[in-house]
Amino acid sequence: EAQLPSGEQLPRYVRVNTLKTTVEDVVDYLKRDGYTYQGQASRLDDLTLKEKSFVKDLLLPELLVFSSKTDFHDHFLYKAGHIILQDKASCLPAYLLKPPSGSHVIDACAAPGNKTSHLAAIMKNKGKLFAFDLDAKRLATMSTLLLRAGVTCQQLAHQDFLKVNPDSPQYKDVEYVLLDPSCSGSGMVCLQDRSSADQTRLASLAAFQLRCLNHAVRFPRLKRLVYSTCSIHSQENEEVITAFLQQNSSFRLVPLLPQWPERGLAPLSQCLRASTSKTRTHGFFVALLEKHSEALSSTL
Ligand code: SAM
Image (cartoon, rainbow, N blue to C red; front, side, top):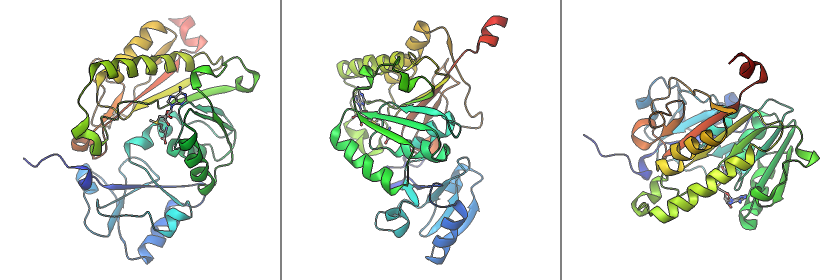
């Protein structure tokens, strides 16, 4: 049996930024640039590519997949903001939240902003995208990234999300929240050797993550909330969601992507996990929470 792929061997994922270009144009550009397009992948093994071959992802329509050795950091398409270098698992939260064009959305812990730019692309830059982060340096990086990506619907704030007032009139139409809080990072392949599970640290991260969730659902018109971490520890994933559901009976988990091969640990099989061995990505967790509609609760 082969060893688990190391970080070096993960495919390179490229998200096409539809605010600036189209998948077809990027594919054509890369073909002219010496890459070989092999069409859409149909199984996981198709994501293991050689040299300059590339495919369209199995699932995510705007994701292209390259061999692990590919580096686009100096490429025109990257510098011009036409492509975003983003792991496949980290494309799931915005893709699953799917805020409609024109909606009001919060990205609670947003920097450096890859998910923010993905949300803006899904919203077609229409509506309002409130993005918060505590770290000024990361926010500065984020401004550059969003400018390069052509994002214009955002309102960035250097603010503690836990101190944002949910009853402020500016948030009265917020129906969608993406919550990707600080976590142990134990799913990042490059960090895995160092990710000894320090129980005190995990407990304090989990407490913070649960506070963020409980804060997010105080926005009065919230309908859907996506929660994600790049942690492999159930303390930061299933256990946080279970505690949240115990405290918030008006929310339920939305069953996600039946075709996705790795599920949340039992009994939370509605949620997704990701890993190098099962999904060829970094380790990741994602849950989608939905508020019961009044119609639904009246029939229960
Ligand atoms: N969503 C980001 C992306 O996809 O590019 C990555 C977010 S990272 C996992 C978590 C972020 O939360 C960090 O940038 C950190 O500074 C920020 N953060 C931590 N505590 C916060 C708080 N109380 N309010 C807002 N942001 C916070």
